[in-house]
Amino acid sequence: MGLRPARTIRDPDKVPWTRHSKVKKKNFIKAIPHQDIHTFVMGKRQSDFNVQVDLVAEDSYYHRDNALEAARKSSNGYLEKKIPEKYFFRVRPFPHHIIRENKMVAGAGADRIQQGMRNSFGRPVDKAALVKKGQAVITVYSYKENVPLIKEALKRASRKLSGRFKIVVKEGGNFAI
Image 1: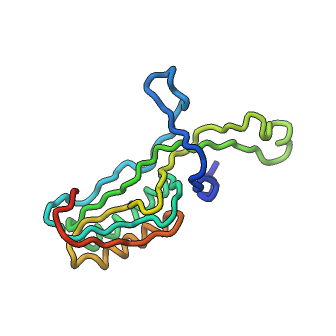
Image 2: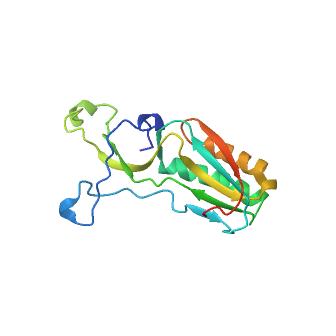
Image 3: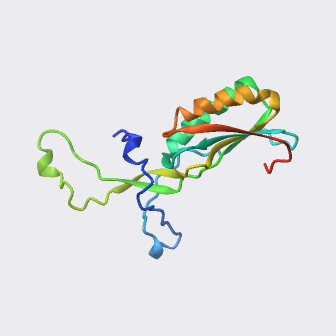
């Protein structure tokens, strides 16, 4: 079965469901789904970068881990092609919210099998990260001459995520990388 559209889970007004403990007795969530995004830090870590470029969310949304991975791949691949070894790339949010889904049966005779909304709590199927308004989703550190390429890479990343984004450029130095 495929993924449901992101519009079904992106509303941040829902109560977070994140309680997973190593102690079995304290567990609310019995099984956690695997995570699609594994690498949060890419590029070359240097202390002489003089520009920080952020992809900042203008709305609060849940972003599924596979959407964050798609955004990371598209922008990091573009930067790796254009300016290899001249940037440091970081994905900021971590997906720890568990998404539940009440699976529905479709087809002939489904009404005899399916229980409808009875016991409709759902099973864990995916993970998501809560991104609040004004929070940086992706941060790239580099040199001033690479800013147009970084902006293009972050535009590509924003197309993979729900909501509106703005690109913020901070100049200076001595960033806490």
